[in-house]
Amino acid sequence: MHKQKKINSKALLLSFLLVSTFLIIQSCNTKEEQISAEKQPYIIPDSLLKTLVIDSVQKGELVNSITLTGQVDFNQDKQVNIYSLVSGNVQDVKVQLGDFVKQGEILAMVKSGEMAGFGNNLIVAQTNITSTKKQLDANKALYKSGIASILDVTSAQTYYDQALAQLDMIKKVLKINGNNADGNYIVKAPISGFIVQKFANNSMTIRTDNSNPLFTISDLNNVWVWANVYESNLNKVHLGDSVGITTLSYSDQVFTGKIDKILHVLDPTSKVTKVRIVINNKDYALRPQMFASVTVTNTQHDQAMYVPLSSLVFDNSQYYVLVYHGHNKASITPVQKLSALGNKIYIKDGVQVGDKLIASKTLEIYDQLNN
Image (cartoon, rainbow, N blue to C red):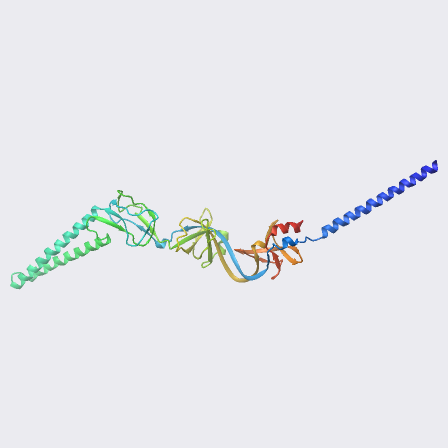
């Protein structure tokens, strides 16, 4: 019986050793499989690869750009404030805010005592001309008869010349005030354009010392855009730099122009200065007070690599691209961004000109490569 127990113990020990050996071997196989799986690179499925856009690293002139906030404004060189040159009562206002008017078009009428006085002065001056002319002719006839002296003729000629000068002055005053001698001052448009301000209303009384104009007309064929430049970005804008402008109303349309003025003062509160861009606005799409996004571009004629925006991935404060090596394989490569211009992203380091890049579904593939 003792011998039987000894045999059972050996059998039990042998079984334990066999089980332990099997578990160890199984564990090693599992670890080897895990390591093998970890070492396997991500293979892009054929079905996905067929849908991908493959682009390449290219090289071209480096264009620097900066985006600013701005606002559309009137071209003040083509804007006219219209004031009344006489006091009186406004009558017959013919235009409304926003109307387009042509040069010489009547905008309103002002009934004025001053204009009535100018008309009366014209009649007096014309009458005085007739009177002094007759007096001069009479004195000349008497002088020929020996009745009047040369002094009488000279004196009559002086009165006549003074009457002519007075009439000429009154005509000039009337011309300045619209050549209307019936007591009405006619307000006319001095230029063609849009009524952008209107303070004149029927029956309102005005004086020549009013601070507000009756109307303001602006030619909107071209407009100004004022863009805000922070102190830290002043070295990035220059006179003559090309500018692309978009607005909320026309987000898919880019209006182009150039910087033609940089103010040399900073706002003490916001620490910004302003730059001015003149924009051709023949179709009147841009309206004053519109907000604008202003992209300023310039070049120093340096060469740099660039990639499409769609190929770029930003993660953990670093930019990456996915380099495609063929055979359904790709790798993650860090790059350094220099600047951006529309869909072009200028970069340096990490890649070479001609490298193939994945330019669609980049985030999806980036996550797979990371995992």
